[in-house]
Length: 385
Image: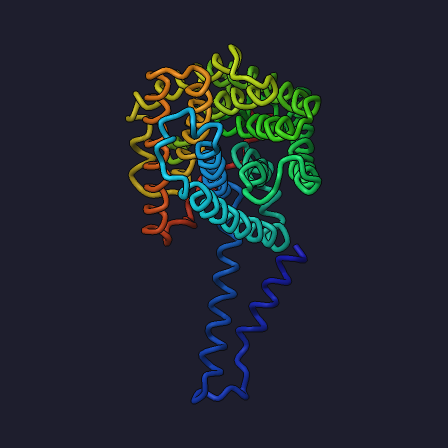
C-alpha cells in the first residue's frame, strides 16, 4: 500500500501546475510529456503480468533451436548441411540478442510491478492460471543461458548463473507442489489447468541445463521431480477432474503446452542418458501425437483467433521444443521420414514465430487489454467449491 501511495503522490506532484512555467518556452511541453509518461508507466504496471513472459519463452526457445540446428554435430547430419556456414554465427547472435533484450525489458517491468503494485502481484500469485507463469521468467533465463554463444557450458560463470535461475524454480516447486500434495489452499484437482505444466517444464529445462554441465545427479533430481508431477498432472487434466474447462476461449492457445512438456522431457533425458534412446523416443512420439491431436481440431481455437491477444505466443514455444526433439530423433534415426518430420516442423516453427512478430507489431495497442483473462478472472477458492 505504501508503494502504491508513493506512485500516486509522484503523479500528484507532477500534475500540480507550477506558476513559474513560461508557456512560450518548451517547459510546458516538457511538463505535459512527463505527466503523460508517468501515467503511461502507471497504466502499464497495472495491466502487465507474468503471462507476458510467453514472449521471452518463445524467443529463448527459438534461440536455442537455431543454435542447436546450426551446430556442427547437428548441421552435418541433417539436410541443413547445405546451408552456408556464414549464417551460423550471425543468425544465432541476432536471435539470442533479440531474445536477451526482450527478456531484460520484461524483467525490468515486472520488477517495477513488484515494487509499485505488490498487491496485484500477490493476487496474481493466488490466481490458478497466473501463478504458473511465475516460472516463466526463470525458464526463459535458463533457455538463454543454454543458447548463449558467448559462455562455455562448463565455465564457472555459467554454473553460478544456473544456480541463480534454478533456485527460484525449486522454491516455487516446494510451494506449489507442497500445496498439491497436502491439499492446502491450492490442491491439484481444483486448480489444475494446462498452464500448470509450466512448473513441470521448469524442472525439465533445469535438468537439461544441469546435465550439459556434467552435473548428472542434479539433473536426475530435477528430471524425477518434474516427471513424477507431470504424470499426475497429465492424468488429472486428461480425465477433466480439474478446472481445465474453466479456461476462457481467449486462453485456449495454452493447450499447446500439452505437447511441450513431453518434448522437453525427451530432450532432458537425452542429455542425461547421453543418447536419444527408447525412453526419449517414447516421449517424442507422445508429444507428436498430442500435437497432431490439437491441430486436427482447429475449431477449438477459432474463438481465440478472432482478436489478437498476447496468449497467441503460447503457440510458438511448444512447437519450437517439438522441433528440437524431432531434430534429435532425426539425427539418431537418420531416415528420410524423420528428416521430413524435422523439416516440416522447422518450417512451421519459423512461420509461426514470424507471424507472431508481425501480428504483435501491427497490434501494439492491444498488447495491454483491459479484459486480460489473468487479470479479470476471479481467484479460484477451493474451499468455496
